[in-house]
Image (cartoon, rainbow, N blue to C red; front, side, top):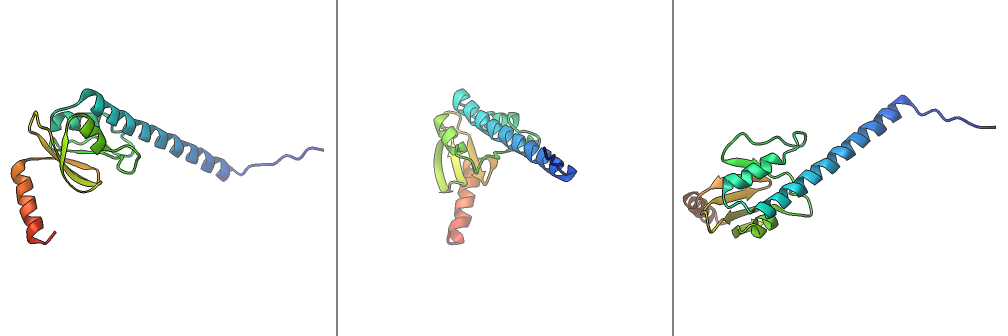
Length: 141
């Protein structure tokens, strides 16, 4: 005698939803890895080059490409591979770092600067950084 088990519709929907989220996460992390690999391979020397690669690897689900010409977003801050390591491999120098999620990088050839704070990648320059350093010193940080 065989017994047939009926799976409730809500369980099927939950399983399908979980599967879709798992696939989106696999795609997300692959895009993060691909973006880092592109930075290492193409070695962008300018902020614009870094921004363009990050925007090209935005998945449109977890984050959208930036429309601000002076900013981008790196969504993979919680991953194993880091933007900081990819930038270093591309020839950028990290000249100041408060933590793995807050640093400033400079490219010695182009002279471009970028400021990374918890995924936000922002174009900056020496004057802005000096003003930031003065404010931090005044605040005792």
